[in-house]
Length: 174
Image 1 (cartoon, one colour):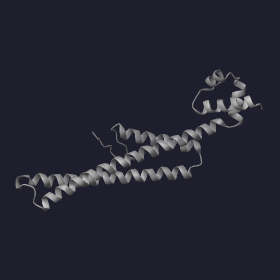
Image 2 (cartoon, one colour):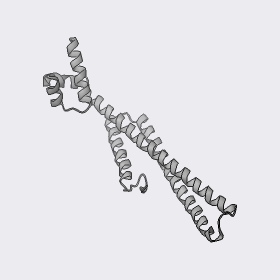
Image 3 (tube, one colour):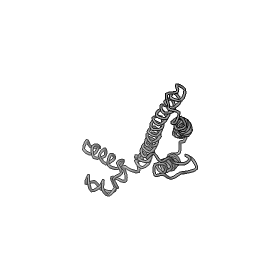
Image 4 (cartoon, one colour):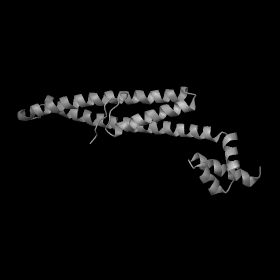
């Protein structure tokens, strides 16, 4: 194969992997359809593209769950601060007697909410571990892709305020 053909083939592969339709690759690089389809079929570009898309979906899921964990950890930290400030005011009797019930209510609310967020954080961490195990163990690219898409759909439904059986009720952060 000539040097120009190698470069054209590389360009075709890059465009194909980026999601260009074969007809667009053909018209962009001015190559024959027979040549492009021969490269696609003999070098298994479709399978490679599917594997690449699977890795991207997996990475996107991991980023989503990582961001969710960080957000929840920040909320838990804020709740711990509120809880500690409330109990400190109660213990040191710095709170006026008329405001004592408010301080107790703030403490109880912070404890309850903190517990809920910690439980949700545990679920998120568990799901992240499951995703890592699945990515290591599933050898069938098609199955892995379908599972990845399903998990991605579940994760994005949480952001839209919906709930689902796997992740539990979605929380409204506004």
